Length: 552
Image 1 (cartoon, rainbow, N blue to C red):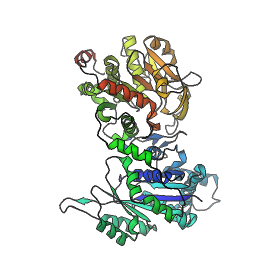
Image 2 (image 1 turned 180 degrees about the vertical axis):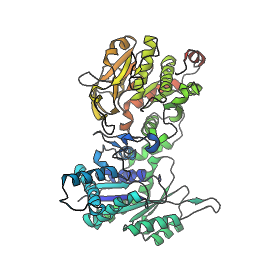
Image 3 (image 1 turned 90 degrees about the horizontal axis):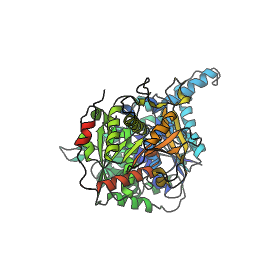
Image 4 (image 1 turned 90 degrees about the vertical axis):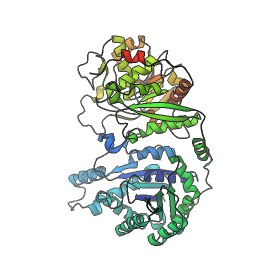
């Protein structure tokens, strides 16, 4: 029978429950167990797809096209498994399904209530993950903190799961904060005690408490928490801030977390094999002889979580190539106002990630022009590919008119246009081209050399595409369409000839990068940036600045 591990949070949010849940998955998988992870989000949105990145950070897209919480990206990177849309459940999805059933008459005239109808729907979605994945263990993380009103139906459902699945098949972990008081230089356990008391008032007694702290958690503190929170001494686990999040599984392994869980759940498993993960962490932490500076030119750089998968993918590539990576976060709005352009002078490579809306677009085009004219390695992701095409078209047509119809519906040169199957769609949620699609690579291209295969499958999230009527004129200008859909109708990858590395993908390769297996496009881009960083006597920025026109 499937075993369930439930992770809740207390005291404050953003403690790292997602990393803790993913790390538990990693150490259990190292014992030969099959593991999957689910995130329960209490907000009423059906999914985060229509939410601003400033509200929610990155929207992580799964193979099946589900737009999900960014924590699912952490889950996939740690356990190295592709998850499904069943792995992200929101209050919006729950209430939508309950109301739809009521409208159909499925409840046979009964009064619809949070208990049992809403909680039953939550439990059904939790067990659906188990059936869909056939995993030995399902790890379920609840967003927010204990005490949040919107979380109560989820916590009640988790309480009932112990009765439904059985005590030997359920395990509750509570992640809390041990705040540090600088005046007395001590960690305080009282917030944790109150958080656990709140959880016990709901009817859940944690089997394990993980204590987030910025300082070492001593034996006396662990004993005190065990006594006052009624958990076993070895089930009080310190989670001290680590040098890298990928060190957390090793910390949990050293604390005996997996062994304790397996004993409590009566799981027989083999000895752990974390050798590859341990080598990777050691490689991350060891001093590097060379540092490569990458500029991420984006619209939401004030909130780095908006580009968390891009950030991680760059670090994966850097670790593989025995380098440090220094990220320069460059707001595209500043570039379009001709501010901070000198920051582009300091980078060895430029990444322009995805996004929506007109704000900051001209700044991204400035970055693309800088990369093209200065021979700086460039990687464009989704919108980043589109602005690369727009910038080249402006040079070819000697006009500022080429554009995307997303930003200028009346442009005479619509090099980027709305996809044909998107024209009659009015609803925004979940209606884009989403999920994994095949891409055929052109022999001899940079993309083909990076992947070393002829066909790849990558994840998409977009409404606009390259307009095919401009293929010939831009091809003559040096643009190579190195990745196409199987019917050759959609341009998936474009790259510039006679350039060290200027490539854009209509898909999001960052979603498939793994710490032990960097994505091929990020690896190839980083290699080009590293080679540039080793080249001295680069020319002055001033000739490029003199040719730049200010944005309208």
